[in-house]
Image (cartoon, rainbow, N blue to C red; front, side, top):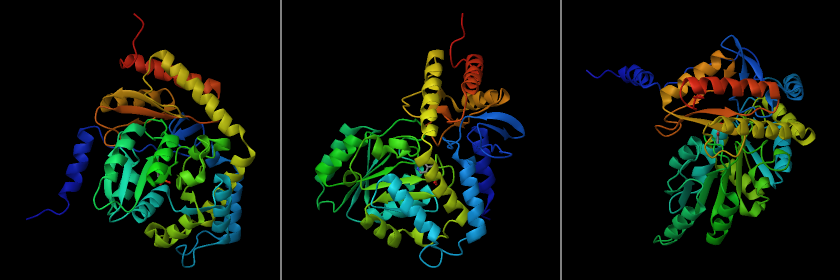
Length: 401
Ligand SMILES: Cc1ncc(COP(=O)(O)O)c(C=O)c1O
């Protein structure tokens, strides 16, 4: 007889045997530079809460007030009875912040990618995607019936080749959609968006950038990668992002033309068929934009800390890959060793988690550190010291002879 569920345990146990399973760490309070994790006070070195906004007094006050004025939930999906004045205000404020004609807010960034990508390209079209794009882009592409082509990571020359090859298809592709992460979440490097946009313009292709790790980090006042490269909106037609990282709350979004937004909210199934954000979330997102517009010091501190940490780690002999942003991977290679390094760091008071296969390729395990604007120099020195001690113990950096 067939056993309908035995695979559940077998597959889980196999992950455990290969040291590829997730062990959840539990925060006993807010995500702050020093926080309580599994009952222990540690330095937070791996949160996406780059600017500390998740615990900012203005965001918390806005969330509490919205519960009083608008209740705990929205009651519906956006197109039926779940669009409140707050949702509309958030979209207006976001469009202004992104310097776009219009913006649309989704429940999550994953929902934006999974709901919008398959609508932008379908049968008779081609999607051309960076080989290291985020899983939510990959799943969005899989949901499309367009042809898929992949170019080498952040390699504009290879993209040019793939575009030239795609032009030879017969019958001709109706649309060409190029998709890239802005900042690559596992490596902390940036897409050459200026070159991508120029190539797209030559071929009449549309550019879709996922700026989840660029907003609040790159560009003028944290406006993101389009601002960082000073690109014109018409050259990057779809700027997707999330409120779950530097904005400190939760929710996905897209910005671009009014046509894009009108199209997206009528076509994205993740948007039309899923409940809208509760008022507290929406109000906190609006407050996050307020903070970014009025308190530039957070982005400045983030970059000061990033430069300090990266230099110290390179001086110690760590391999930080090709990172140029506040995401700094510390390369280890073997997944078991990466897990042991993370455990040693935790014992000495630093939370920095290992990233292993399948999130990165086999043999490319790493500790992914993410900088926080509110860490002090003393905090950074403590973390650097913990990396040095554990790195020497585990033979990741050389011990003095
Ligand atoms: C590049 C990228 N895109 C999209 C997402 C999904 O965003 P969200 O957390 O809002 O679903 C993430 C989050 O891990 C990400 O890193």
